Length: 318
Image 1 (cartoon, rainbow, N blue to C red):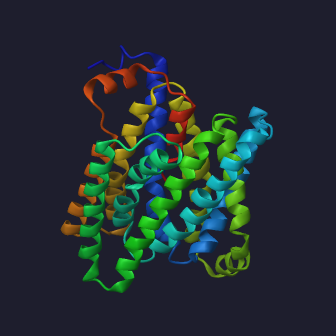
Image 2 (cartoon, helix red, strand yellow):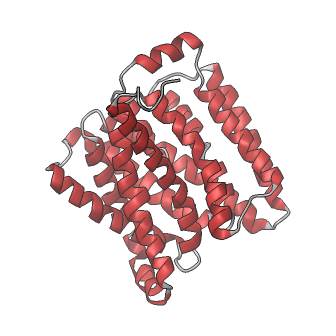
């Protein structure tokens, strides 16, 4: 193993940026759970998106990013509706029914669903490892659902909503993949976020009403979601992705559920039950199986530069 002193400065910066991203994405689940006590799901999504658009817009102005090319817009629109719009609303709703750790464990089947959709829609194939991983992950999701059934129908609904959130963001990322061949990651993220905000405008009245009654802590959590996990985290991810391989970056997302469980325990005094944790770990094991490759392929992936296709994995978390 290389020591910190022997690593090139670029690798250290990339590792630091990736660490910031994972921590912010994990914290999003905890902030959603906290802010959701005062804000309705749609209102919270709109407030988060509006603050995110504001910060991303400033970054675009500083970097002098113009409008995305016309060819990028179909993917931006679809990803904006699915990932920024639908995903955030249903995840907020789901976290009103289940704890943050359970939500993170279930939502992390998203990369598997993403690979399945890419194999179908983008003709990338359906290898046996993907199908095996899908079976394992959904067995884990079934265990999570059964473990929550004893706590009432609301908890089961929360698990189903988190699964819908995983499908929504997976579909959004698959839609972004072609867009990233034409526009920059910052352009695709900024305008996707803006489209999600427009889609959530019907919740504007509810946002105003909730903000008038919400405690300051809930409003600060909502703003935090927009500024840090939405705007800053994707900027640091893009910075890291440009300086390392997509395979190494993708592996960092496996740390998110564990961090969420730890953060929710410290901040919210919430810990999923043992059966729920086991089911969540089975979900993650299925994702690992689906994304594993033969040794020769894995070695080749480690030395290959991250391209536009790899950049699509930059949007795999909350």
